Length: 166
View 1 (spheres, one colour):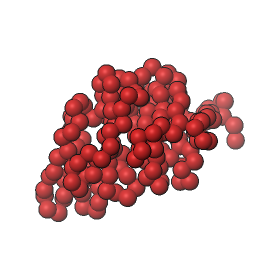
View 2 (tube, helix red, strand yellow):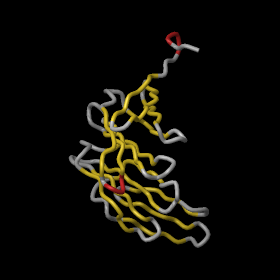
View 3 (tube, rainbow, N blue to C red):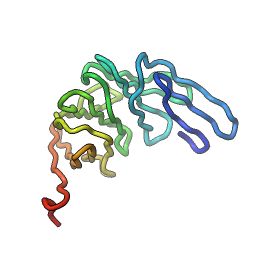
């Protein structure tokens, strides 16, 4: 959050705690357990992903604790990771389905910019490159560098150990 504030989730609730004022506010719109949280670069919005049969992503203003956008119908089982790009225009998500589907949303317009299946390895985190043209996916036995070109995404694997190349 902003300086002196903490944002965290507990079950299906997001808590905003103002440290100096010792005051809490709550975002209660999610109807299922929250599995991940991402802060918008302008630090006024937050996105949360949920678990469930048809999980959704909710983008909300954490000052007012009001929903701005709901992105749904893409992932199955749950959402394991979310990240805004440096401009705040795009949001990448990773699903908890068997193929760990990755989706890059133009979240304000509720449009999918690009999507791809990433495979069976579990994703632990995502982060955009500073230029916003790609992102990094890390997880169990994987480190991938994704590039976004138009509506397509492709990746290059990082190699470790004996298979690594300088």
